[in-house]
Length: 121
Image 1 (cartoon, rainbow, N blue to C red):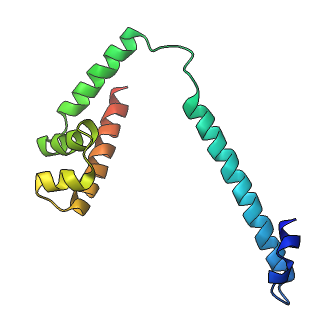
Image 2 (tube, rainbow, N blue to C red; image 1 turned 90 degrees about the horizontal axis):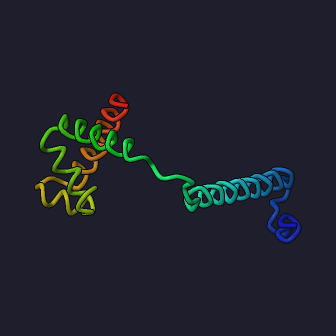
């Protein structure tokens, strides 16, 4: 139906390629909608159970241990962005570094913290 509606736009001599292009776009859009819908349903799903007090305590201990292994500068940057909710540009200004440097450092410290948490699990 889309191809029929846009038939005047078909380049002469390249009609088949044009049809494949339209079909590819339709399939991509359909898949994107399906993935978005699935992610939305998963995000809105209500957990069927609450975590146990023991699992929360273990997670807190693991996070505390991982946090202690970070350098003070890493802790400061991560706390400004993650805990205080500052945008990276404002955290960079507070630390006296460029926003680009703050972004790079933040990505590195997040990866390091994630790795430390994986080891402790």
